[in-house]
Image 1 (spheres, rainbow, N blue to C red):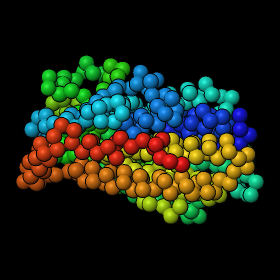
Image 2 (tube, rainbow, N blue to C red):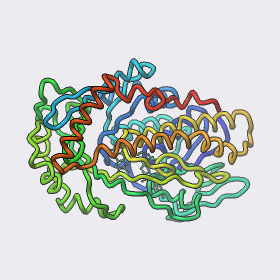
Image 3 (spheres, protein in one colour):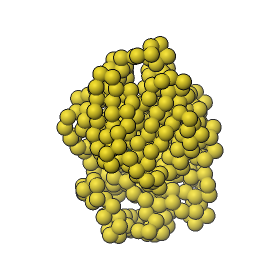
Image 4 (cartoon, helix red, strand yellow):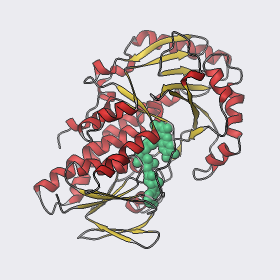
Length: 413
Ligand SMILES: Cc1cc2nc3c(=O)[nH]c(=O)nc-3n(C[C@H](O)[C@H](O)[C@H](O)COP(=O)(O)OP(=O)(O)OC[C@H]3O[C@@H](n4cnc5c(N)ncnc54)[C@H](O)[C@@H]3O)c2cc1C
């Protein structure tokens, strides 16, 4: 085992995944997570073929995830008052025989944490450990926690999400992410409680006047629906939770979708309650000046949070891990005292063009999710959407191999 020790700040999705990838290369790590335990937050996550590539080649977890998630090969596209339009997909034939999976964020998170537990000789997880500051020197780096404890390592990786403290350290200033303007909410309910039209198979993505509606099979007898609609910005730390807990979010969803007759959407909205609602307000991180110093580097949402409109938020964190773990593994195997600054430089150089591509696709996808309250505009949008899917045919934009078929492991180091 290498004598190197990596401090990972953040035990969300990216932190544990990076720790597993490093452990597979015999590199030790300590994960610092501010919460006292794994949080049951977020809704369903789609792991597209590019994310499954990392799960397979870097983490060796794809078979396990397919057992707890639901594999699918295409997304069915519906239009309010238009029925089924098309399906986009054929993932497994297009992308190295890798279908996508839909999986609850908490299930994915727990699977990663369980794997860390199996690798506990190389991975140390410290809950209730909130990073306060960082000391960096020529010989190593030190994480100072809120409770005063100090953890030493050779490098520190910031996987501390959208409100990253590590980002503040690397950039020397606070950069706030931009609210996407779209609020996401939904609920999980037993599949037996909804009646799907015979021609509707899951997952389904439906355009409606008010926003978009997605329904996923969770693979455990439940379905999760998620709607995204325009909502005014609220305080990132407390405002969204207050919006939901006060019951206003549920009222707004019911008011917005109250005139929609299309089933199963109507019956699912009718069942929505504040007690069972799951929610998430996505933010976009503007391109940052840099992602690293000599011994500190950011990955995932800390470096480049992207709303999920193109299903790529978490996938981009996993691509980071596919590349960074290879770069670090190679450097440590070749040199017992590697110079980490150039490794982080290479990581950032290889990742930036990909992140820019995904950010552009995401912003484009987001534009189609906006509300269209004007009747004429909705008719034009419906006709345009119908025409686009007719022209694109069965595999649609997904046949863009560069986007969802991207294999970060194929990048030359
Ligand atoms: C509440 C929530 C719900 C989400 N729901 C969905 C969803 O339904 N579908 C979807 O596609 N994507 C969802 N996402 C986004 C997706 O999870 C992220 O894109 C992905 O997790 C990126 O991983 P990350 O590890 O970079 O960030 P995160 O998963 O956000 O993890 C960051 C971690 O760092 C910890 N942390 C922060 N500051 C400190 C500190 N100072 N010290 C120690 N620890 C710290 C946090 O507690 C957190 O555990 C959600 C994100 C959040 C935050």
